[in-house]
Length: 292
Image (cartoon, rainbow, N blue to C red; front, top):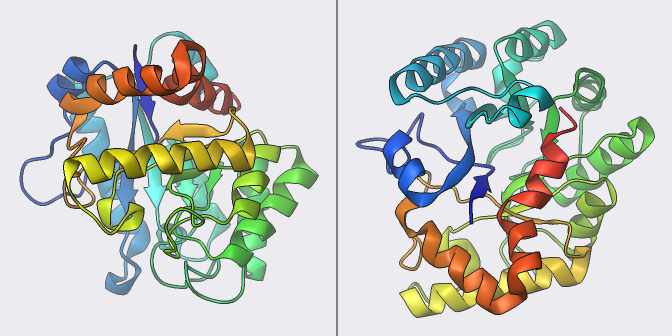
């Protein structure tokens, strides 16, 4: 079984990335999303983002990965998609948002771990700013997915309202369920339902400290499946996808790299049956991504 992964940090990880062309091939990855992560504390967000766009292009050439910029590329077997993590990348400018779209960015995380010009981050009160609302509206029009990972609860519902009005899906590319583990990086049941109602997906991440107290392989396996079950309970079986966060956090003891994905996919099929496992692995994400 192949899979789609909605988030990794291979472009900005220190040292040797676990996500590369060879590991993706071994793991059976049909499509990997690569995040251009912009840390808002360092300034020059747009310059940083465009430098990472260049890095992505070079990586695709080097690793033999075809970039996805639209549904036709998905149908043709494109294997890599460029995203942005951190709305600081647009520096308060809709023109720079358009420029990033022209560079191939097809999904943008509105915040990281700090409030910014677009809105409030996880754990903060508030939601989208006026500029954030304008930005999401423009993203809907140009078919760039809004990603609420790292966003506040208020931001999630503000994005949901705009996307409902525009008839557009939105995603949480890498998240978990707060009812399973009470961390602000995880979504509430209401947030999960809002993503599902838009036609979007929640990419379940493998960041151990956001999933459970125990970091053992068996404890993390149990936690991943507890989050998976709860996300589907809250939002239905069409909402759950995968968003590993490989290279963005300490390796998970159960699934540490793309090389471990066949093991996870086998366990998903055992737990949920082939039909649902295929939805989680790639069909749900593929349905949402065909909107771009």
